[in-house]
Length: 437
Image (cartoon, rainbow, N blue to C red):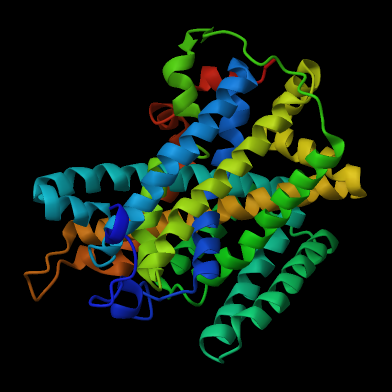
C-alpha cells in the first residue's frame, strides 16, 4: 500500500461517489468524514483504558500510547479503510472472502457480530446510566439529534455551504449544552435504555446524511474543544506528575504483559477501529487521498486524547485518585482533571467538569449508533449472496437491524457484564485500578 499505490485513482471511482445510494454510500468532504470517524472510534475507550492501566505506572501507559498510535493503530486504521476502498467499500468480512474464501468470511462475520452485540449492550448501559445520573447531558444529547437532522437537511438538500452551516451548527451545538443545563430531562435508567434502543434502530436504517454523518461531525467539535481546553490548561498549569512513573510488573494476579495492551486498546490500537473504517467510513470517502487524513489522522487525535487521559490520572495523589475512581470510575477522574486544568485560564471548575462529562457521554452515544450500523452491515453481508437475484430476508436492512438491536438490548438488560471480561480486563483488574496508581 506504499508509494504510488495510495492516492487518487483517476481511472477508478471511489466507493462514495461511485455507489451513492443515498443511504449508506454518501460521499462526504474530508473534515466532515474525519469528524464522523473520530467521533465513532473515540467513545469512552481512550479515556477509561489509560486511567485503568495507570496502576502499572504512567510511563508504560504513555509509551504504549505513543508507540501504539503512531506505528500500530494509525497504520491499522488507515490500512483497513484503504483496503475497504479498494474493495468497493465492503467491510472486513467481504475482504476476507475475496482473499481467503467464504469460510473465513463466515467465521469472522459471526465473531464480529457477536462482539458488536456486546459493545451495543455495554454502551447502552453506559449512556443510560449517564443520562439517568446527569439529566442535563440527556436533554442536551436529545437536542443534538434534532440539530443534526436540521444540519444534514440544510447542507445536503438545501445547498447551504458547509463552512456557513458549520459555524451556525457549532454555535447551536453549544447553545444546546446551555439549554441542557437549564432544562434537564430526568428519566429512569430502564426508560433511557428503551429510548436508546429505539434511537439506534432509527439511526441504523436512515440515510447517513440526515443523522449519523452530521451528528458525528458536529459532536466532534465538542471533543476538539475539550482537547484544546485540556492542552491549553496543561501548558499554563504545568501540573507535576505525582503518581509513580512505574510501579510493578505484576498487580495482583495480572501481569503488565499482556494486561497493559488489553486495557489500553483505544488510544493505541483497537480492532473496533477497523470495523468502523471498513464499515461506515469507507462508504463515505469522497476521494481515496482523504483516507490518510481520516484513517491515520483520526487515530493520532485519539492518541492525543489518551495521553491527556493518563495525565489526569498521574497528576493527582493516591487518595484523590481512589476517591474519584470509587465515585464514578475513570470518567470521573478524567472530568475532574480537565476541569482543574481549565481553571488555569478562567473556566470555573464546575462548568469545565460538567462540559467534559457531557462530551464523553455524547461520544459514547456516537459509538453506540455507529456500532449498531456496523452490526447491521455485518449481519446483512453474512446472509447476502450477490449471485442470487432473490436475497435471503435476513439480508434486509430493517430485519438485520431489528435483530441486532433486540439481541443487543436483551444483553443490555441482562448479563452483559458477565461476558465483558472475556473481551477485556477482568473485573478484578478494573477494581484494582481504583487503588493507588
